[in-house]
Length: 184
Image (cartoon, rainbow, N blue to C red; front, side, top):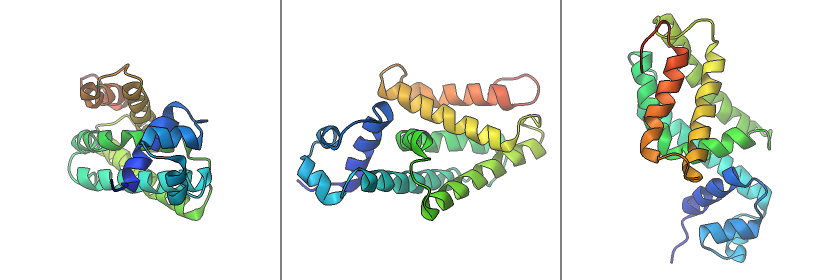
């Protein structure tokens, strides 16, 4: 059987979002590999965490690209984004919970790119008159991160159905972010 590094990282992210103190043995077991195999690919916990951060940022950026968030109406762009982020929400949950572990330039640059694009989306929505102006674009981006991470945790724990995540995140975020009354 060929080891898929990204599958190992996905399983590690799923476990670590639920149990941040999981051991390398626990991570190997969750990924269906031996601890020795895990260590051949990741020299230690720090190397595994860094690889998770890099892949999570890469996948989150790809979701932003897929959603074409710089195009069109900001509300519709946000809808596309939530749909595109859902498959990578486990990585986003991990990143959101662990983003202070490493302060390397590469990780900070990745977060800065994500933050800049999300902030620009919410600022555009404010300029279009769709989003409240009393909430900063930075806060709205943080709220999106938090909602997506919470949704991933709920799905992992079996408290939420994956098919409901997109609707629930959009209803709560848009219900709180939009000017005036109205549904998502």
